[in-house]
Image 1 (cartoon, helix red, strand yellow):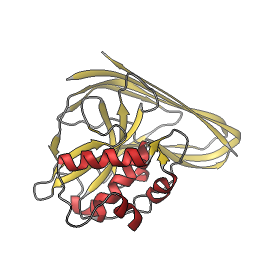
Image 2 (image 1 turned 30 degrees about the horizontal axis):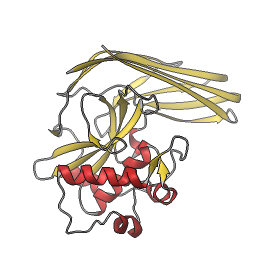
Image 3 (image 1 turned 180 degrees about the vertical axis):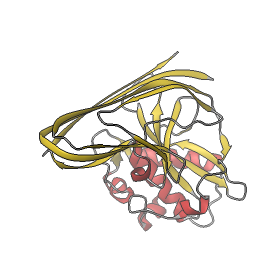
Image 4 (image 1 turned 90 degrees about the vertical axis):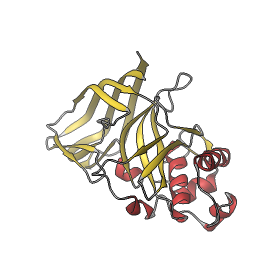
Length: 265
C-alpha cells in the first residue's frame, strides 16, 4: 500500500474574451477497495454541480457567463492505493455487455486484427493481454504530441505513433471486436523517471464475463495496473472519461498549460 500526494493545475489562456462556457470535470478519484481518498479539494472559477454519471464517475459541471480571457482549475489531495490484479465490478456499474460496443475512437480495421494475429480462436488470459499490450507498444511508439484527443485507433495504428490514449483505444477496439468487454480508464500514474505519464490512460478488460471480474492493463508500460495507478474515471472511450472538457462561445485560439505533481509519501 502506498500514499500519494497529488497536485493538478490546469490553466487556459485565450486569444480573445470568452463570452460563455460550460465545463465538465472528472477530476475526483474513485473510492474503491484498493483506492481510498484520504483528502481531495477542487478549486474552480465557477460554482460546481456534482453528480454521478452512468459509469459511477463523479462529475462536476460549472458555467461561466461573464467575459474572461483565462481560467484555472486546481485539484489536490492525498490518495492511498494498493495493487489489485483482478477485481469485481461495483453493483451499480454499467453491464460489461454494454462495453462490447465500438465507438468511432475504438473501431479497429481488418489490418489491425491481422497485424496483431487476433481471431475468434484467440484464448484470452492475463498473460495474453500483457503480450498484446507489448505488441501494441512496439507497433505504436509512445511519442508525445504525435496525436490529438480526436485521433482514432485506426489513425494511430497507421501513424505507428501515439500516446497512452491511443494505446488504450487500440486495445479496447481489439478486445471488443472479439467479444471481450473493455473500457477506458483515465487517471494518474506515478513514474519516477518521467512526467509525461502523470496524466495517464489504461484499460480494464473483462476476462470473466460471467462473474463480472476485470483485469486492468497499462498498455503504454506493458504492465498490469498497480499501486502507482490512481483512477479518476472509466468509460467507453476517452470522450466518456476525460478529466476536463467543455464548450465555449468566443475565445479564439487557446493555450493549455497543465502541471501535475505526484509525490510518494
